[in-house]
Image 1 (cartoon, rainbow, N blue to C red):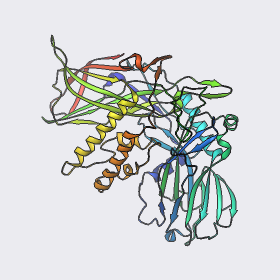
Image 2: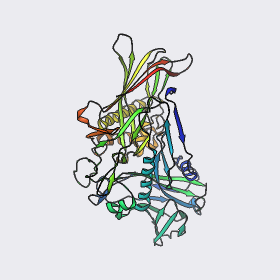
Image 3: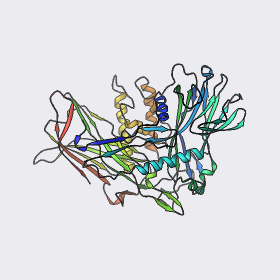
Image 4: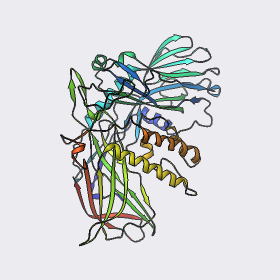
Length: 510
């Protein structure tokens, strides 16, 4: 059960109608039985832009964005292909990402009231500004080019409420807007390809738009719709591609990682995540099972810096947040006894504050005795090394689950796996979406490959040389750890209940 002394009050705005409709359609991660269209190529789109060097490309230096193929649409003839490139925002309460087609920021913020853990100043305006810049970039810098591969004419209204249609030829169009519609004919085979506006690698062009160097996160969503009004609730999801565009800041604005060539992205080398305890849930099932469900309230906010009109912030970028968790049993006149340890955390979005959920760590043992005194210690030493240890731990956890007869493995079982899909810098993570009990062998194999790729990556996360929090900055080499959180409590478990509650709780942030 969550410790009630923290008193988390959620002030969350309602979602926009079309964000909700699209969100409902995207929850169905496979085509419906009657949906005829198929989509090939759901690989993550990964692009790095360096205005300072006037260059762009993927993380191997290739200046191309691959297309998705939409085909076998005979059963959908007469319906409409709906294409939307929507910006991504993260829910402050759950940490889950939400797709937003339009430029209106859907505020979902949480306020901590009467909390000893409320050591972090809340700032929702930076999150809203970040989303606004992201939306401007997507609309001005990324077009969608659609070509019929068989040469058949593309049928579309030239003037749509939410879309500008530019005709290249009878069988090719360029789409710009929040959502665009094409009439589906039985013979259509569509190539759907994002195209980067070459003006957007120029710092002056970005500056005029009000876009800073930052991480851009989006989803290219493909659906079928009953009409092209933009109001139909008759929507079938058929495919989605996550997009991550990293705009590298000017090296005179922010400290960056080493320059080893234009084909290798550079990232800010200063770490800016501050944290405190979030809700904690503990459960004890019978004599031999304990579940520890931790969360952290995190803040990725830092001051803006400018040089020659180019502004940026270290918090404009996603950053890892992982720490070593230790659980001690306390006794009078005795040294604290370490009874369990693991690494826990996740990824923190740009200019964001909210709750990072842990991995629901399960132990085949009874760890708590009602009336006993305990201490959690969360130590954060080096973001990059801690994250690598964390991923190796996830890998071992997957191996154990896979080797357990009758085990059900899925993203709902290990919530931290879902955060890996947000990396946008590592290929080979497609298996995460299919990781479920119906297809364990394939899903686990792909996920293992993805984890191996992240662990071995020399690209992201970067090695940070300093950490800034609360207005002060220090070098990582000067301290054994950059942050430590301590929580002491007396465990209380009512007879017949699996919930462990807290009494006489004390929290400390070092």
